Length: 195
Length: 195
Image (cartoon, rainbow over all chains, first blue to last red; front, top):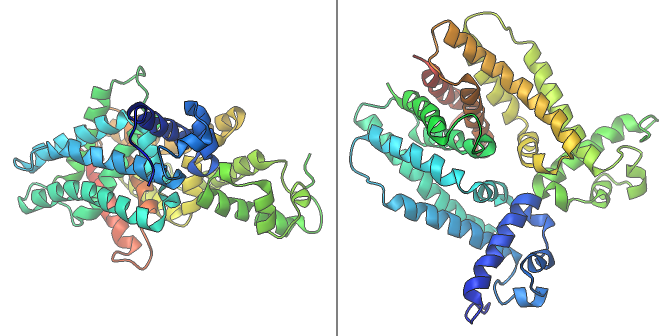
């Protein structure tokens, strides 16, 4: 087991993960060595193993923590209420939560190929749970007769892909505020699902 | 200059690019060495330089050829006619063209960060041209009073992100045929832009 207790681990552990996130996002998982991560946080490579078992564990931890935090943040959202209101809340939440975490979004999608098969299964389940929350809103709306969608599961994926796109082009301080972007996307989502 | 003439280059050049595409998509640009590409096509690494100046040129050539072929395939589409018909044609074209090229789509988005600044400018212009074709359809539809979109440029990006998502989850032989998937996405796109 990696030693994660001790006087410095509370500070150094998160610094190691932050450095790994930054390096994986900018250079790609396969191109980043444990030596490079160690040097980024000012550790000898041997000392890095006090904070993580190996590079695969670091990648898994980053994705796992990202998705766990995402699901936790969603857990506060109400599952009751009008499907249209819940969809609007989901849309705003997704755009804002991910806009603040472009590196996590990039890695969560792009480095899936580098997860070990066992780790992939865990991450895929968490992603399915998140996607399932949107699918439930869409299915509720279809049952209530306010949405018209033949395939709520496919539509949930389509909406998430569309909203993820914001992180690839939106830059703060540009022509449009995030409020304005949210309005454009919400109008499209709202109409796309409606009867 | 790289030597690209000669008896074998007509066969070997495309094989080099195909191997590079496969390796970049599965392992990431930064993780793939020229030696690995050479070994994949059964060449000595020195001989590889007969077909490409360096790894950066290979990446640029792959993206450039992909986008040039995409724009060429679009050039046959009619720019006249009803904006709704043109949008449907664009949606079907985009889904089908990219579904056949998941590696190219993955690289075109994910390896942008590894392009040299000069190469990035060229690739970005080609991407903008393609996005601009969809934006023109949307703007024409707004002017004709059939579409209701405050920001056609943002909406064009949103639609392209949504349609690109198909390549991340769709597998042939699954529950839905590509025709059915196309219908689900087209219904969403059609409604999303409509009044």
